[in-house]
Length: 109
Image (cartoon, rainbow, N blue to C red; front, side, top):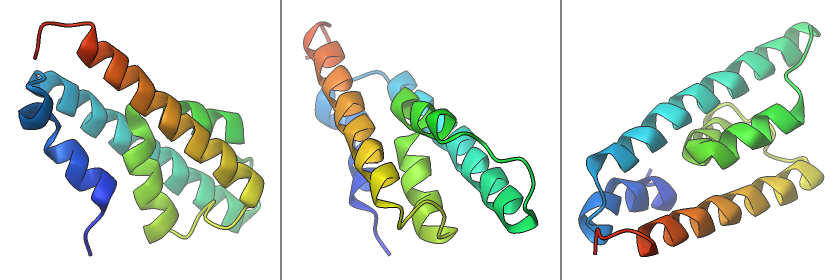
């Protein structure tokens, strides 16, 4: 199964002539965010202390949204709560806007 956002990030350095470090930041943040979702899913199943939604959203905003998207799909966690998903997609849009501003503000092009 192909994930368009993940595929787009993989092509990011070539398409924007951005440093590979940008991709590395997204990969690292996505791994951390995926793990946050996994721990929260486990806590939900065990009825243990949960990770606040704000933490999950901030992790996604901090370049971890691809990992969050994968966790939502693979772990079936936070994938049906409408209010959370609305905020999630807002954070994705904000992150994309920040990336575009960063790219335009540099000499990578």
